[in-house]
Length: 110
Length: 114
Image (cartoon, rainbow over all chains, first blue to last red; front, side, top):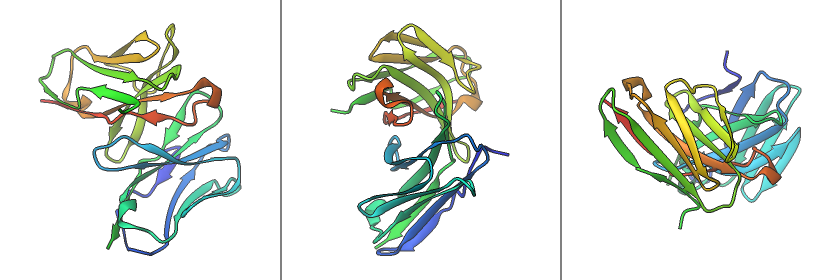
């Protein structure tokens, strides 16, 4: 079993939709939770970073962490074609190693 | 200019050849990483370096070696390339002051071993 599971998609939504991206994990020691966005032929870029449980909002993006369920989510409101990318969740226990999910491909249709 | 650069961006090589991938950064970060990305497997850590004199193996270091020539430069070598090393390779950096959690990635090198 992988430490971090993420549905690879692809997920296709119309412009303006609310998008929900999710990851589950097995290691209860994870404390730091990140979402990275990766455009085609580019490197991942950090989108959201959350410590421990709770919600964090940044513009159209909301990251949610539920440690009791070992489940994290990224919500995108009013999705735009420019949001079309692969979204990677990532987690860290506080040590040297960050574990990445395999990524979910998102397509937002105009 | 990009903060983290990688050369070459694309490379095709033959089995058994030695190849070096290079990474440079202008972010002033002390920590640098090499990852490979394969479809369905996500990013996997090959090597990481927390400063010039500190180099450590990641989860998939077999068949790879690294050199940290300076704080800003971290190179990855494949001593004898094999086809299953065909992948997308990323260099990343982070700042000790903010921990390993916020990593900044280069644009990647697409390597094909035939």
